[in-house]
Length: 127
Picture (tube, rainbow, N blue to C red):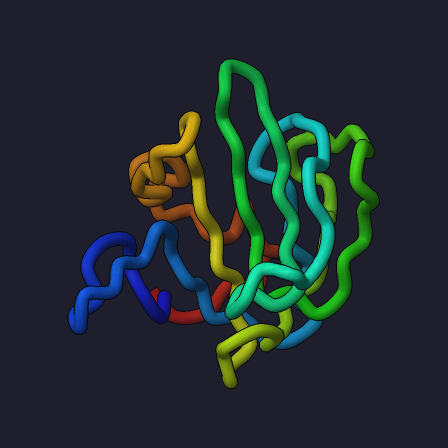
């Protein structure tokens, strides 16, 4: 992992986790849902995907190289949705992953239980 959830100093906060992985590593959906956003308009996040899940949950996947799904598309847990890249404000290939309940960011480590491999195609590095 590059950056953990929480305060980063200089008044900045990481609302997710950043997981180092080789460029092109498959990024997989954390849970079943519907793609709510695909694009690169949010400054710093590069190629970003947002997936809406049941009960007000949402996941975000940023800094992707390729985006493999379209807005409105239904996705299944474990389905490849993107590939790891270094888009946005990062120089090293990585996945920025967030989990939100409503507007509140929650610590992904509480939900992925350290299993970054379930979000990536089995080639997660670091940690």
